[in-house]
Length: 114
Image (cartoon, rainbow, N blue to C red):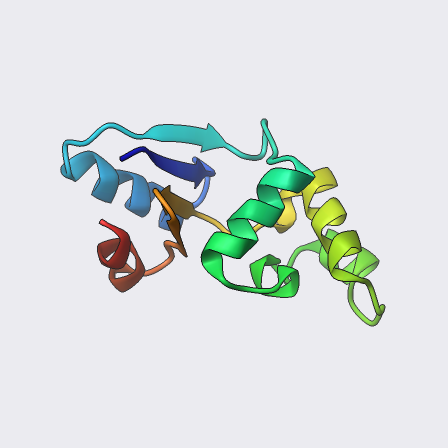
């Protein structure tokens, strides 16, 4: 079963998730999502696998969130396009395994998918 991690090497949580994957001695694909942002279609698929709304996938502390989203009534489609155009807004890391996905910010989330 293929495993993907949407990874940011500057993020301690993302690096911890990567180490957890490496410790499993299984093959996986690393996607540096800041350099290769997921398409709008891929983001929709990720959201469906996570079972969350676009707003729940957004990093609300980022300047671009404060400037472009906060206090505005944007549609889910607009939020998805904004994440595609500004991938820094996407929560990280995301691990996808088959038809399951988690935002792997905790050991419990990582364990639940591995």
